[in-house]
Length: 160
Image (cartoon, rainbow, N blue to C red):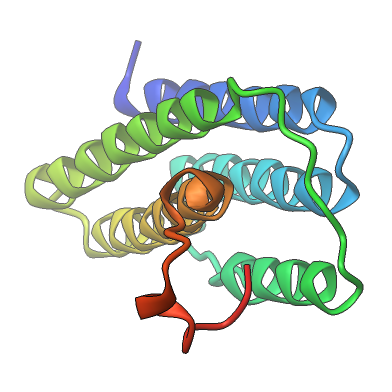
C-alpha cells in the first residue's frame, strides 16, 4: 500500500467513525458536528486523491466556527444534552485518532520532497488539529457537570 492509499484509507476510517458517532447521539447539535467532521474527512480524502493525480489543492474548512454556532444555539435555547455516560470515552478515542492523523501528516511533511504535496500535508495536519481542538472542547463540555463545583466561593461564575 502506497502512502496515498494509506492516507485515503485513514480518512475513510475517520469519516466512518464520525458517522457512527452521529448515529449514536440523539442530540441534533452533536449530530450536526459529527456530520461536519465526517464531511471534512471526505474533503481530505478527495484532496489526497487529487494530489495523487497531480492536482494539489485544498481549502480550509470552517468546522470550528460552525461547531461554535451549534453550541451557541444550544445554550441560547436552553437545550440539554442527554448523555448515557460512554460518550466521553468515544470522544477521547476520536481525539487519539486525530492525534495519530496529525503525527502522520507532519511526518509526511518532513519526508515529502514535492512542494505541492508537502503543502497538502501541512494543510491536512492543520485541519486535523482543528478536529482535535473541537473534540477537546466537546470532552470538556460533556464533562463539565462532573467537574463543576458548587461553592459560595464560586458564585461569581456563570451558571452551568
